Image (cartoon, rainbow, N blue to C red):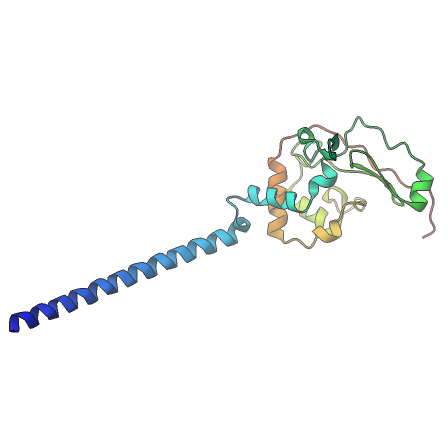
Length: 207
């Protein structure tokens, strides 16, 4: 009887010890898993790198809608993947339209969706690739200043960015988001394309 009691005590002690160890291991695994999830969700928006996060943002907010020239496909205009984010083609002439009519009554958009005519004059979508004719020579601070303040090339003394560039909305992005976008743009294929300068309106307006 004494031997049986001693064995029961040993079994109970061993079971308690094993249960405690398993609980601690599970708790440790859970904490590690939580740490991993937290790190992944905070760093780079949950993406594997800043560049990948930037690519996601550029795609999601539609930068290519205006900055990637379009070509006609079976369902209408579609991105020309060979000219990704390269802006208005330098060899393409300005839109041949009645500027006065467009500026006073409406809006004209070129077939490539990279040239726009409106009350502000003519604007051409900029080259956003890593080439020197794009943003290849830009600094990160310069890019943030351009978006935050709507200034051409991120220079304090330059003119304001023209429609249809929605910088007033993009300025609400966080610094980390804008830095990720810039990192992605700097990683893009460089496409040499000197976008023509904008043109002022032909109609003189009273201020």
